[in-house]
Image 1 (cartoon, rainbow, N blue to C red):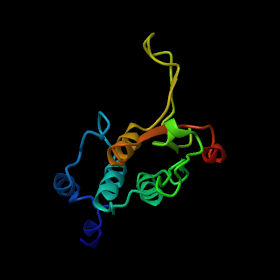
Image 2 (image 1 turned 180 degrees about the vertical axis):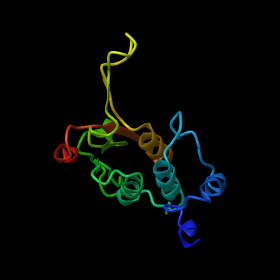
Image 3 (image 1 turned 60 degrees about the vertical axis):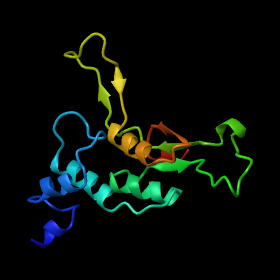
Image 4 (image 1 turned 120 degrees about the vertical axis):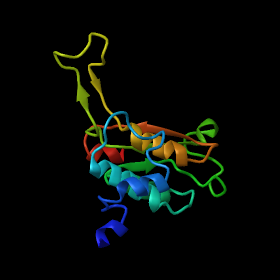
Length: 151
């Protein structure tokens, strides 16, 4: 019963927790999610503590399982009126998620119009997009390898 108190570990009460937190929401992927995916999403939503800063988004990515992801060019505009990328890039910031996140290759059974390779995590992108300030634009990059996620 003690495990059911923690949204990150619940199994028996997960349906009830999801109902309370409005999950699955528009960020849920199509098809069936694993118990671990449901627990991660529930934990991220249940433990969201506000704050429009890099640490807040870093914690969201960690809760979704992307501990190697990095965030770049997130600027406090009051203290940096001259952004590094120029005036037009003032409201852009980038989340680097290692490219091995959900890589899918075309196979012999794939349709002719399917992409040769796809990657990315629509759930992580949707969650960050929903939480980002409305006047900003977040760009998601999937660099090759963990060491390149920091570039």
